Length: 166
Image (cartoon, rainbow, N blue to C red; front, top):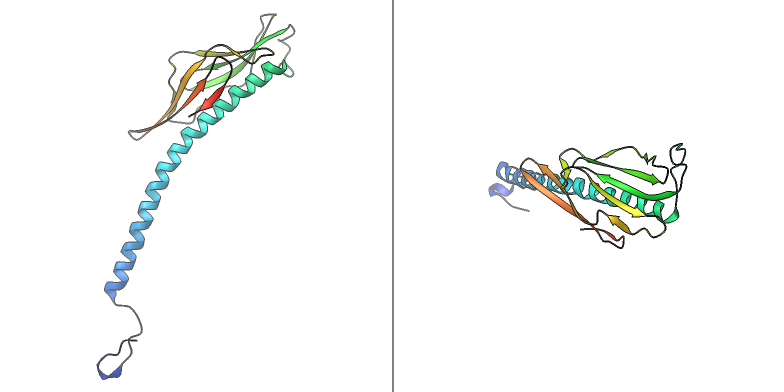
């Protein structure tokens, strides 16, 4: 308690105290929102990289198990491999059969402002039963460009079939 002259008790805050409190809360809120925007942009690129890696692993598992595409009239011969065609803005999976009639999955597009480091088309091919890579091993980079700031994640594919996101 603060005693003022004439023994009056002060019950409240001064205008300066309220303004300083509001300013501090506003500053902290602004910094939090700005940090969340950066975090969200990084997560968009990271999620796209993990989704691509997951679909690469899916194609690899289908090759290892010898799984032919379900409901596809085109793949009547022996399954030779599963391929993933990666472009700068999208990718899709293709089953390669001995009867030369490939069967592809729907195209998966990267999120807006996210592109891969590939110019043209890169083919990652997983051989049947081993899941080893017979073409397309290397490092692929997904980059998100947001208002002049870029964030990236890389996917490394080893010849033995290892798929790592960094």
